[in-house]
Length: 153
Image (cartoon, rainbow, N blue to C red; front, side):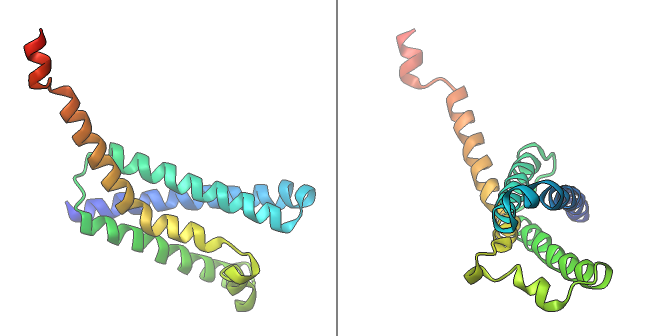
């Protein structure tokens, strides 16, 4: 059961990857020529972060797997680590970017906000798990008529 959870989460990460590649292409082909590098970077980071948040929420909300809280923290950690490994491995060995170029995206002092995507991946499973639990408890409580409501009928 536990392995199934991680395989499912890895599949979700591949969805992130596909969107990230598409997002990067849109940024390079359309946004940068029109808006410039930095505004295009901000839009791309916001789009990818938003996508990660929405997909994670759907994953947690509609998962038929009962995922323990500890595993949700590990899933977030797994997503962030795989992303960094992919970013550096693919970026350096396939795309030919220097280590300095790759590290530049992590420089918050220079306005590079790639770290926001990593934080979304890292924290969203646990945060949304708490939100979904609260919502389901609230739904359960509102589905039962209160004592005062049944007396009034």
